[in-house]
Length: 202
Length: 341
Ligand SMILES: [Zn+2]
Image (cartoon, rainbow over all chains, first blue to last red; front, side, top):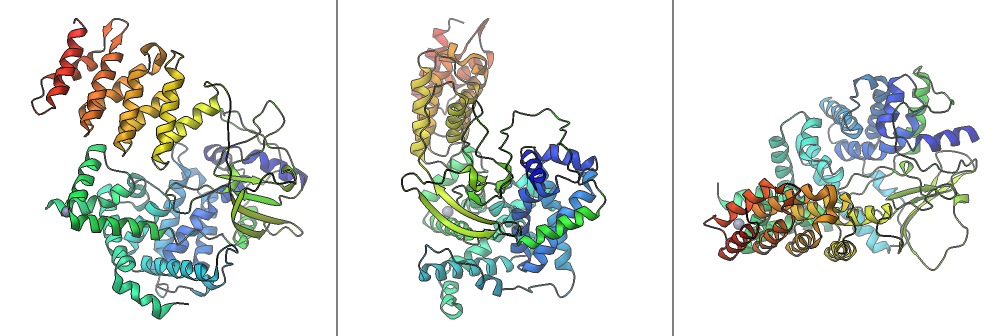
């Protein structure tokens, strides 16, 4: 226990490139540190993309396994996050392509999330309702649009990075984000759509 | 394509600040003047904000356990040998090696709407070993073990977003994560790297409030007006503000400050400052910013063997540019005549 903690403390001080250098040399001991650095971002991308927590968990695990297995494909000059998101986006697209996987969302997971204690029950309900509407609205986008908006809005990536991940031109990313925003705007800010809140409130 | 269509297509770029300053300025001018685009812009911004409500969820701890199991079975070495780092590295903050459980995991005040990437906590240690290593790190996330924290709490700091988590499935260990808002006062010399970095950081991100950026620029001006050599990082940050800041008042202050710094105090960063001023003179949509850029450029045009050719050329072009502000053209011509070329 003591040994492990000490080593971990040192590992966390290394850069992504240094850690990947070790992995490329066949040493998998940075696995936990790399996982801790990126798992939240990877998991949440997959969860927002697939809206299925089980599939998001599987995708997260697989991304990191691929990171170890295909470490030699990682170019040390590149950003590790861009490479990991390329792998993640590929897995998520594959998942959607397979039949029966579409729109198999699990809303019940939302209900079991612990509520921040300092907010009133009313506030908590409203926040959850907005969150539900946002997650639902994201599912109305095409997978390409969803991929682009998730990487731009939640990961803060540039259009150039997104183009690299999605395998398209920057112009295409621009169009996808624009179209995604047009759809989301209608779903989230139009009063007509807003009214459905009363019907579906928790 | 009509103006309105073009502007609407640019709205997502305005949100992520991916438009050049001229395009940004033109878009905002149109939006201010066009009622229907203004409505769309406010809906666009509201939508962007609402998206942040679908906040990040924690990854279930079982995923980590499953992954590490699989990694161990993959045949790569999972050794406990000391790490040998094959690269040159910056000095690191080596944390105290703790055998105790990590019992407090503190997430720094993280704004859920931020578009910046968020690397989870483990990358940044906050407490370093004894002097002379730094004792405190300003960071988005900090991960600490309980015995790295003094038991008593000083004052009544704001703590929010509290969650209690099991610590990676280790029996008998718990974790507590929260956002902490802390007022921090740092004192030291103007040359202290920590202060230089802080000022550059505040200047470098237009998400920071206008007053903060403005105060940082004022601090730079007060500090370096005496001729003390300015840190190149500060010059880079000021140049960045001049190029990218959406707020004219802030750009104006940045250009005035670049102009007020004694040329000698810029050292090796003078060329960079000149280039930023040339860019501003050519591209900034605001006349006052361009006007101040003329003065500042005239100040910094001198190089050891005469005057910087690019600076002289830019001033010449401005002096003869028909659609430029007449007063600015006169100022550019005056600056050139004082150089006695
Ligand atoms: Zn318009």
